[in-house]
Amino acid sequence: MTEAAANDEIWEKYERDNPGWVDELQPPPAGAGSRSTMHTADYLEPDAPDPEHLEPDYAEVDAGHIKAKARPRGAIAYQKKIHSVMRPATVAALKYEPTKADGAAFLIYGPDLETHLANVAATNKNVARAIDWISETGGDNHVLALALVTVPLALQLLRNHEPELIPKPRGFKIPFTHGKRWGTKWKIGLRLGKLREMTADPDAMIKHALSDPAVREALAKQGVHP
Image: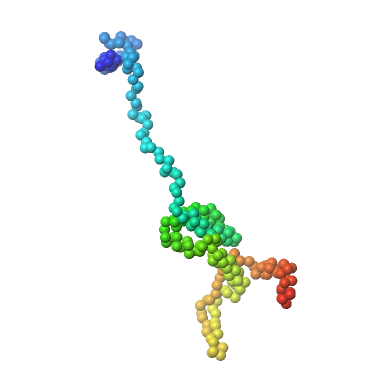
């Protein structure tokens, strides 16, 4: 036992035997040095760590956990194909008020969708075949582009003839029956509903289309005078 340890033991026993002991009023116990006496070698020893303030033993941090992973082979090529479909669809949606919010959603979420869908296509043959079929081969999808311009035209034609298309009971002439008609109590027709907002007023469209002098002149040469 070191000198300092022996001295501390004397003091601890003395304090246990004299619970009311006050340092300033009573002399130290016999054979004990000063209470603060510490052997030089003990002075150099570090204090024992406080268990409540010990730093947790964390596992080593792996920076690779947050690094972007390499994309599958072929993902970039599929992303171009997907973009060839998404781009015209986004532009078409932004043209009309009822679908403008859809176009905005494509603008915000489309890039991430293209990236992750392309990664799946590069590793999944079924998804890859579907994208190949939709996007055809390279460049923008011409079939999709045709559909995107055909749909507005078809809706406008329906709007132009909307009065005749209002659902109502209808009758049909039966061929080779000398004018006999077949009727039905069911209402047959079509309503555009919200799709009507994607069309123009027929009279306003006529005025706009025929307001160009060059168009009127070209029609006049062909005997058409609108």
